[in-house]
Structures are given as structure tokens and as C-alpha cells.
Amino acid sequence: MAKFTFDKSAKKKSPKPITKTKISKPKETYDPAKMTKKVEEDYQEEQPKKKRPVGRPKSGRKSYQTVRLQKKTVLKINALENALSISTQDATVDQAIERVLNSLNADEKRSYELWLEMFEKKDNKI
Image (cartoon, rainbow, N blue to C red; front, side, top):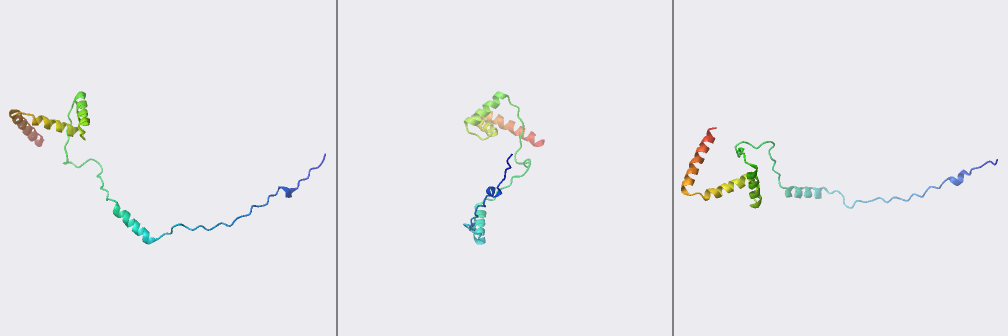
């Protein structure tokens, strides 16, 4: 059998030439005077944000009470709210009550005022 000989020099690759790396220069350098002006402008443009209090609202702003309504009545209130572009159900009901009050005759209005006064006094006792 013939003996194989290997020529190691044929396998060696010559290294690629290394090109000189150019030193890059920044487009803009840090200027403290420019930065302070920029920060001041940004600060003046920003509106101070009001922090909302965490948790439940303070007592005394508005008092709420639960009223039980049938689903049909709630659907009617929601439909009125959307049709008249009113923001809340409370405002919708308030506006509807105001319209009814404006249509009352003198006797009904007097009766309403007496009942309202009685209920307000009763509420203030509790």
C-alpha cells in the first residue's frame, strides 16, 4: 500500500490584511450652556400636574343614596342619557325632574315644596 504524505503548507491560509480604522467624530458635542437652556424651556412648557388624592373622596362633597329601580326604568334613563348627550345618570334624572317640576300647577308645586321640606328636615336629623 502506498503511503500518503500531506503538505501542510498548502492548507495554511494567509491572513487578510487589516485596514486602518478611521476615528469617528461625533456630530454634536456636549455643551452645558445649550443643555441648561433646553432644560429650562422644557420645564417652562410643562404644566404642573395636579395630584389626585388616593382613596375615597373626602366626605362633605356630595352625598349619595341608593335608589332601587326596575330594569325597564334604568334602560329608559340610559336611553335618555345617550339621546340628550348627558354625562351621568344622576344628571339625566335631575334634568327630567326639573322638567316635571316646571310643568306642575300651583297646588301641586306647593305640595311638592312641603314634602321636599319635610324630607330635608328628616334627612338632616339623621
